[in-house]
Length: 269
Image (cartoon, rainbow, N blue to C red):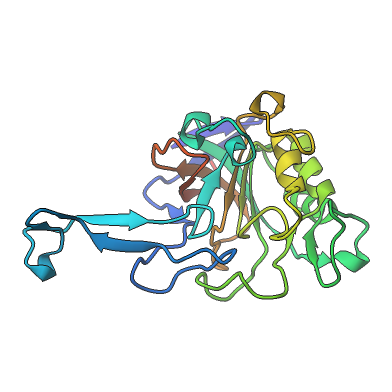
């Protein structure tokens, strides 16, 4: 396909998608986040029917149990923070969106000129507004409303995020920078935009969704259609640059759902 953005012509090959989702193996290794139980699968049993061909059933039919926020790549909406049960599938319009992929190095919170609420603890690492600004400044091109942020340059996608030292998270200024830049779709290779233990403040989430501190009222949100995808996996072989993003989610009427972000590399026409 050929398309125009910002007065320039581009082309994209829809036959070559790149998935950013961590495959969820219900019987094998999985991401581990926030002390949540594993995602599980068990055969459906109704009367004499067993949904497992290995146990004599006529077909396979499983009951799946998972916590989308904890068991793999997922996309969440404003409903993550509100009393109203806002559904992510109703807030995401679907379709493709021009996105920019950048690689950002987390920095020690102790040496950064940025912060969060509560204040970062010793040993914390931040994704800062300064680092995000440098990453996009070095990549001139079309203005996008979607940003994919890679913080891990190697390793394997399946790992535990329950270690004593917290993984990086967004500074308050970084979240504000995303809002000022007009980013409505954010994809992170982190388990959360915020520190795992932050006293329930979820500062970066609130700034990104435009929700006042402490508010659980969806009507107070200034960015009610923004979305955050967490626990994506961005392989080191995927180059920084511009892509079309197809953020695929099931029609779950929940605040978050498992997702499969697909990237299609964009080239000048």
